[in-house]
Amino acid sequence: PGNASSEAVVYHIEQSAADGLMTITATLASDFPDEADSPSLSIEPEGWGRRVSEDDAIESDSGDVLDVLVVYTNEAMCAADGSSASAPGCDPSAIEDRIVLAIAETNTAFENSGVQTRLNLVHHYMHPTYIEDADYAIMLEQLSYPADGTLDDVVDKADLYAADLVVMLVDNGQYCGIGWIPSSPSGP
Image 1: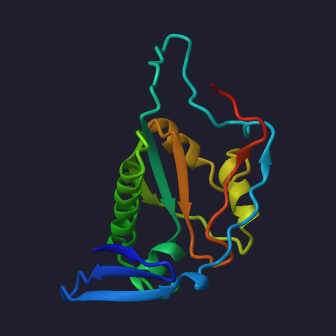
Image 2 (image 1 turned 90 degrees about the horizontal axis):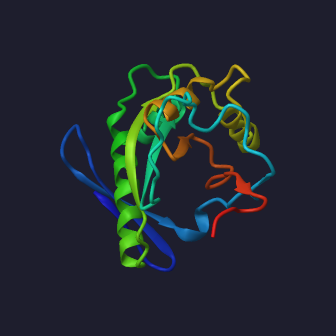
């Protein structure tokens, strides 16, 4: 299983868990949706950031490894499985395999490009109650603001697994993705 690409075509190769057959799907690069314009983040959303007491020792982190938490929706899980989101019993193995593959391919791309940073998947899970919105910006805000009553548990999981990054997978073809970009990056 994996992906291969040329300048114009992306090939996705996967093995069926049911019968073991390999499938190759070709997608024209031009068929992928555009990226959304990233909103500028002037302040960190309230509630995010590791919450520790003054008694807890915080070890410094070199940044060589970024710990990633992935949360996905029922709709995304069923789409990865090839099922309808309204069909009962979607198999999570397809989306879980894709999550692991995405981390591995990103690390390979980093290595091949001379980037020292690596991603480490610390946890992945399907959010039990979240229903996707049609608007990416609304979903980003729901993920970012943990006191709005929508995805409030995600920040707790990010703290529990000490995640540096949180990724949410949805079944929405509006964009390839969206995320916050700090308005004034800090650091050296």
